[in-house]
Length: 260
View 1 (tube, one colour):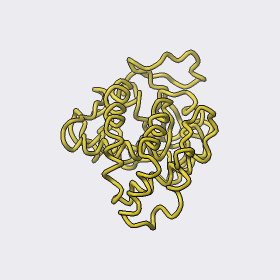
View 2 (cartoon, rainbow, N blue to C red):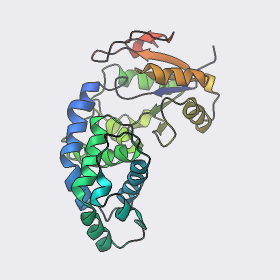
View 3 (cartoon, helix red, strand yellow):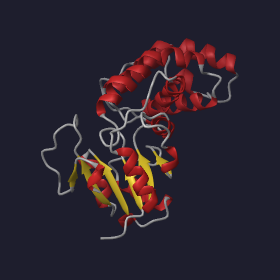
């Protein structure tokens, strides 16, 4: 077995309780999404997220998707989005129907879709909550010691469907203080889907290590299968509150980072 040079961690159900994500973070973003979008069209990064959302909508295959195009979204909102003035952008966005856009985002949230555009927008909303103290990142008790121990031996990286910004907020404003100094790199779905072996190969390449030198922790078996197919070492994390796993697919199971 190769020496571990990168400890790669999933977030939800691995370093943070699933309940924190579903009972605090998601409702916080859902409640504020409409106001945030209405007030943020001067922000080029928000415009970029909305442009990506348009592209995601165009490739949507679920027949249950809200019929947003009948309300003018995404077609009128899609063309030359980034080149418009702020005033033009706001006018067109409101004409396209803010409620329609929010309805699509909430539809994605209801299905826990790993939408890169949605996750980026959520991260921007959570930022104000973390910075104001309304939100505090909830991590499992064994996380700080493990990060410290692993960072002294190798490097620690995070790979989550949540945006890189959201990941950094979670660790910067955690219930154990600012832990970002122990994390060498962050990756999200811009790197690739979490159930695709190529994503883990890309992370290994970015970290300048062989995939066999990466140890990936997750509570999701298909993610671990993909990492193993890419050549990584794996651990299935069984935390209190996680869904039971009927078939571990041969991945070593731990219920605490103290076991690694």
